[in-house]
Image (cartoon, rainbow, N blue to C red):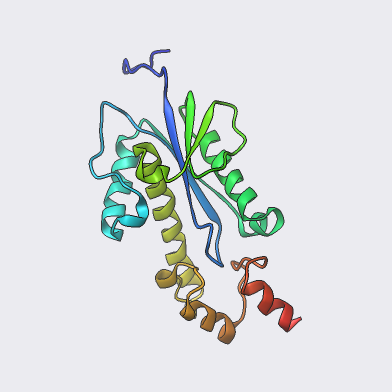
Length: 199
């Protein structure tokens, strides 16, 4: 198959990664990216090793230069109903399904694969080995961080823009002082044990 720009879509590979499996609050995000070999992006790396400003600038470049990209999420309710692993797989599935251009193969960071309609491979530490997975990790991380900033504006007693929903001392102190929010994951400890104590 040849696209209008003459680019052959044979052997299109999408990289997939997630952000936000560990925090106590907010959805889990996933992104899928098919990079364009004719428009390489310099500096792609695992989002965790990049500075916030570098991630933000790469986020813009990926959206501009990638052949296809998609960002999806699984909600707090889905995380609590399904468990975090299954919710993560669901977010990844949604990200791949949301790609305007469908890939021939999918490379997923980690050791588990979502249920997909095309061949897929799990790659441990893929976000530091495969550029398309690095790109996906950046999109998922930046998109999730944006939501955390929004959360802080909605709930100013909680410094989501700082701790990003992770179980830091500051965040746990905020929960103790101000209680739980709808955005907190009820099945995650220490939120779960705190809820049980209060019940």
